[in-house]
Image (cartoon, rainbow, N blue to C red):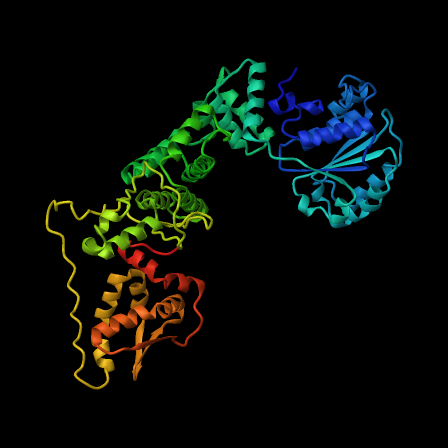
Length: 576
């Protein structure tokens, strides 16, 4: 017997042999057993998932004289002629080459004739979406009221191109992409039956390359077996299909975790020198990061469709990153994958993006940074130890993931991509933030620079009203005094502009984007007024107003938040 490719030799002959489509085969089997046969079936789904194979099994079952339950016997003359493609009762039509209205008119003429051997006349039209509009219209009446012995089975990969008038006359079955794990197990069974050794990692590589298509996986299996007829190995798969070794992606992630940009460049050079393509390497990195993100979010890699040895490596690497780090890396690599096909220098573009990922630093809780900033502002004398009261240094070591968020300010980042909106707010900055020294810690080198002393209060005027010039000259000292007693209020007050002094009313104006700060100062104006009495010897009443202008956008409002401004200034960050 002539050689047959694996996809034909191992084509399913019974419903239970169809891989990954149990929801469809169960429905068809129940319909056959109960006699509920539809006049038209529509099988839709991506390539190589079993649409035409299931149509042939259904056609065999409808005309089989010795049916085993709902499955055909595959031994009777009707089953054999259908399998050989010579049956007069089962006609397979290619919709791409028979798409004219004349072809459909000819079909309408022959459907009236009774079957020659079986009980049904079945018409299987593959790629039915290729029929012209006129051909579809000519088929409408026949589909709605066909002869009782006629069954139509349509198959298509582009169901959105099929008119609704056709869809309403069919029973529609959506074929799913087959998971990589099921494809790998099916290839393992074929390899055992053929007496070929196969590595689990190699089979998962073939399944991943097939992208949910069992037929594609079987074709790739044939290609690799032709290279080595004794064993299907991961090295053979990489060599035959030109894939980038998965270990290179694991090493690259380790280099990104260690912020080793030199190692990143060496790995890219090794991949290209070994014959790998930059686009292929980037696509593999996207899948690799997806597995890492899955393992991080799910708390383990047990549900990943990868080899067992790879699951442990994914869990280990996932512990080196926070979720926000993986999200930013995923977005950056996805952008890179989209830009490479149009880039004149794809290698340089990839090196630039990956080195930037290595230097981007790690995510840190904004709540902890705000607490440390407040401790710095209070100082060691008034804050009861100041920095010593903070929660300690927040090392941003790559080998440790950030703890859950304790505050929800807007996310701040210096990376190229922003975290998910649902993720806790974090700040990304340099790869290691300097620890805060306590007041009792001795200086190791040069003495710490002391803050400049505040200007002394202006003595109260000898008589008469307080002038605006005197208030303006001493305003910064008042702001600093407020910040010493109530740091948040002092930050809000710092965004104000002196608008005028009328009698004993001091008008403070705020930009439209600073409406929140304006409200906070208005709410706590008694504190500022009391400090003003101590400083100038005369009571003043504050009046807070917003300057005229267009209403602020949402982004401007976030950027105008004084608390965030102080964080941005202190840690060299930016809003995303």
